Image (cartoon, rainbow, N blue to C red; front, side, top):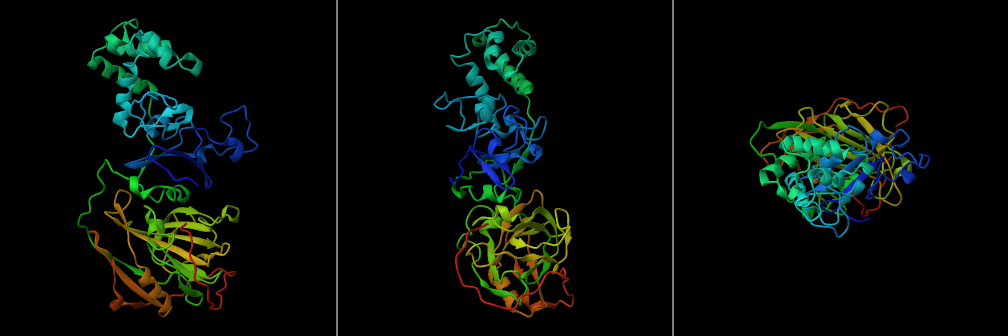
Length: 432
């Protein structure tokens, strides 16, 4: 599958992605009415459009009327300017188009300036304001160009017969503002490249080398340090071996939950427990029909009670009933069992991140505790070790010298059985 570039857009629904300009309804919803462009068989609200920009990943539901993230906002295109391959350059990403051939711009300022560049081009410069809007927003597309032209002319206090080429720069700015207002814009979600709200299927395609932030990241500044008690996530009776930590094997990419992943091997069916207290912020149950070599098993994103660190668990099945977004989880709680897919050695993929400043606006900084967790897996099963988080950019520090004894017993569902210890062949794997 191809990777993503700046200016690309992706449709996403239920672990499926499409680079088409339109939602692939025939493939995703085979029973939908081909003559009704809005027939998504009740799944319209679940579909999202993501657009890759240097400083963010924009997300919206532009196909849904009055929902967050309109095409104008997603594409940084306040004038909803359309184009064609090989068409004029108005500062857009070359060759990138969204639904209805909308151009996609690197910044909102570039899209705003493109309105003036278009109206001062040979296509419009000799037209009256009225004729310009008959061309810009034709009635054949469902627009009312007469009302549009009257609104713009009224804002300028000039007749609609005025030639576009006679407008001063200040008048052109007023015209740009009015076009931006009439076209309308509904903001969506502005996600950091390493946000855990970006679907894994899209995150795996993001190229790490193109990110050139144009907005300031959250500042790394001194905050109150804290500690989190941690224990082994994989039942020690079923633990086999480590299969690689951060930046090893398939653990590459810009997203913390891929790059900072660690693969803790366990026999298929081995219980997995929460390694720390937290609450679930994103959850995807296991759907065996959608398993593949990169993404398989349930996905659980969890943050600590203070929202200053988090974890990502995947390759799980047999999850307890009632687990989902908003669930509170205590360290040692049963999360499910290790799921095996194909010939990949069975394992838990666990990634951890510190959120400097705290979520939702803090800076996400993944960290490597792979060897620490392998140590937990081979220590006494009741071992609990506090981990010091500094909140100033320094890596966290396990405090082995003040280890504790866990006297509680995790409760497993009646069907969950702890397997006898076995060995698993070492092997490579793909990141989730």
